[in-house]
Every structure is written in C-alpha cells, then in structure tokens.
Amino acid sequence: MANEAYASVDISDADVMEAMKAMQGYIDITPADFREVYQVAYGLARDRVMKGLKAGQIMRTPVHVIETGQGLVEAAALLAREGISGAPVVDRDGRVVGVVSEKDFLRKMGAEPGGSFMQVIALCLQNKGCVAAPMLKRTAGEIMTSPAVTATVDISMADISALLSEKGINRLPIVGGDGRPVGIVTRSDLIEAFCRIE
Amino acid sequence: MSYFTKMRGHTQSPPAVGPAEVLWSWVGSFLGISAVGLIHYKLLDHTSLIMIIGSFGASAVLIYGAIRSPLAQPRNLIGGHVLSAAIGVTAFQFLGGETWLTAAAAVSTAIAVMHVTKTLHPPGGATALIAVIGGDSVHGLGYLYVLVPSALGAAVMLTVALIVNNIPKNRRYPEFWM
Image (tube, rainbow over all chains, first blue to last red; front, side):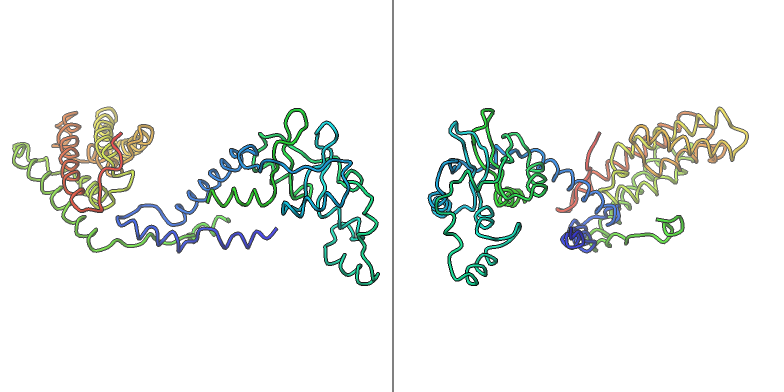
C-alpha cells in the first residue's frame, strides 16, 4: 500500500501554525501536540463512522437480479440497460447463489483470470472472429461466480471494505435472513458514502 | 526515539501573538496587580506584610497573558492558591525546622494535590513555598495566610480578569468555571 502518498494529505505543521495564528490569543500547546491530538481524534471519528455506518444505510435498492436459468444474451442486455457491471444470480426460490459480472463474461471470452476487456479485443482481432459466440446458448448459472459472497444489513462500512478487497470483488449483495437480496453495496457506493461524510 | 535524540526537541514554538493581545495582556496585568497591591496596602497595611505574595506576579502571566490555558482558569487560579497556601502553612507547622525539607515537601505536595483536584496553577507552587520561606511575618499569620493574602488576592485578580479580558471582541474569559 502507498502509505507515503496518504501522508501527504495529512495535516501539516504549517496547517497547524496557520490555524493557531487565526485563533488570536496565546495557545500554550505546541504545534506537534496539537497535531497528535488531531490525529488521534480524527482516527477515532473515522472509526466511529466506518463502524457505525451500516450496509442498510448505504446500500442501493432495488437490486437487479438475474436468474440461474436466464440466457447470457438476456443477462448481458440487463446489465447494459441498467448501466451496471454485475448482478447477483438467484435460484428459483429467489436466494442469492452467485454473482455474474463483466469479469465472468471476460473469462468465458478467453481472458485470463484478472484479464481485461482489451485482452479480449486482442484475441478477437487475432482470431478474426467474435469470441462471444460460444456463450450464445449458455445460462447465467453456468458462468456465475459462486458461492456468492453476501452479507446482512448490519455489516459495517469497515467490514464491507475489508471484504471487498480481501475477496477481490466489486459488489456485495445484501441479503435478508431468507437469503433473498434486499440491496447491494458496490465500491462506488462506499466511495459515495465516504465523500458525503467528509 | 533514543534518549539523546529526545533532547533535541521535535517541534516548533507556537506563533507569536499580535499587538492587540500584547496590549490587553499589559492592561490586564497592570490593573490586576494594582488592585491587589492597593487593596492589601490600604485595607491591611497595619500588618505591612501583605504585599509579600510574589506568586500573584506569576498568576498575572497566566490569567492576563495566556487566558485560554487550562492553567489560567478560575478553578485553577482560586483552587491552586488556596490549596497550596493551606499545604504550605501545614508543612511549616508540622515540619518547621529544616527549611529545605519543609520547602520541598510543601511545593511537591502542593503540586500533587493540585493535580488530583484538577486545579494545577503553577503560581500555587510559589504560594506554598512563600508560606515556608516568607519569614516571621508570614509565619505569624498561621492559617490566616490561606484567606489573606492568598484567597483574597486570587479573588481580586479573578475579578479584574473577568472585567478586562472580555472587553475586546475576540477575547473571552474564562473557558470554563468548574
């Protein structure tokens, strides 16, 4: 992690001196002491927000879902129409059993794990044909990533962040006690929630 | 951080205050010390020893010069002087003889008690010390030293601080009472 990059946005001695000057009267605390108090307090505030804000408060609803038996043409059309890059896949009872995302499509089109859209384009041009053709008859259930990583509404922002980076995924379906989706939290939802705080 | 590295210091001095702050510090301390001096001199000059309390000079630095400091708040000013005076008198009456020992015990105990009671006020150390080394005239006061000059002087200084420190628009005193 680029911790040094984060240090540059941290509060500086110069910031503290400016603030102390603006406060007029003599303040009998050194800039370093002030910085320490600020940093500890800021850390506590951040933790309070990260642990206090729950999935239920930041998740997106309603959830667009794909059924296991649904054809991939239909699934791709849904993702395109809704402007999303992935969706939970549900079984006949409506329970989340997997997730289909751009990554799964790319993999089926010949991209290596972690590969990109550009890799598929390159393949496409080399083979002089559309590498998506073999997917025509497949269903969502066949290409989805499963089991699905899900969580309940009471998971905190901190735990969602940790889960997303640990599992290398971009979205977390939020499910009720019956396993049915009630919302979804994506990386961009996390960023949005965080920006609103600050 | 190694033992010797720590001695180099690690931060800078807080910024200097503006001319207005200097002026109000001067006005406040001039009026505060004048008031204490005049009241003690006019009302109590028959004892002629009431001007001795040098620790008010130190209190003036805090309550007129560093008014946002926790050390300069009313609780600390009054509590610090009164408790330290009582400890100083007690130390002299119990230990008396060996002045160096009595003085050290008075000051160190005063600091400890001020810490515990959340009334830390550096001039309190001087108030405790003066009770021991102030000579026969101070010793003669006994526990009266706690009320006059200590408590009375602190109260007068506080009154002046409340009046003067709140005159400029961007100055206020105190930060808290209790």
